[in-house]
Length: 102
Image 1 (cartoon, rainbow, N blue to C red):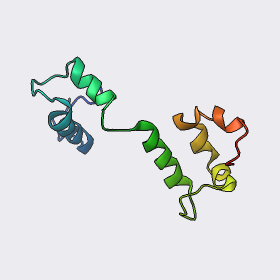
Image 2 (cartoon, rainbow, N blue to C red):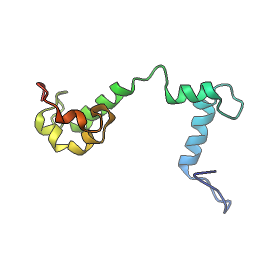
Image 3 (cartoon, rainbow, N blue to C red):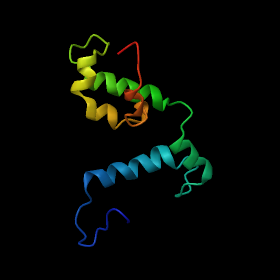
Image 4 (cartoon, helix red, strand yellow):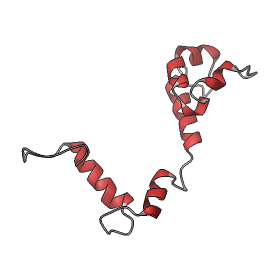
């Protein structure tokens, strides 16, 4: 209700339906209609998901123009805004340090 209030009684947007399904299928593990502390922890810090690896893969996928699974200095610089906005680069701070691989 914080993000969508169906005040006119019309159909719900697709994103609301998707969020309801995500909640019932994946978030509300004990099916009590609300999220308890353990369910919130599992949602925010899932045991089977590596955030750093996912972010690194995302950066390579989006920046690797020639799709050789290696980033050149040019590919990084051409996508500097993505790297500066990434937690994987400490929001750009790591890019200011000297790196042999760059």
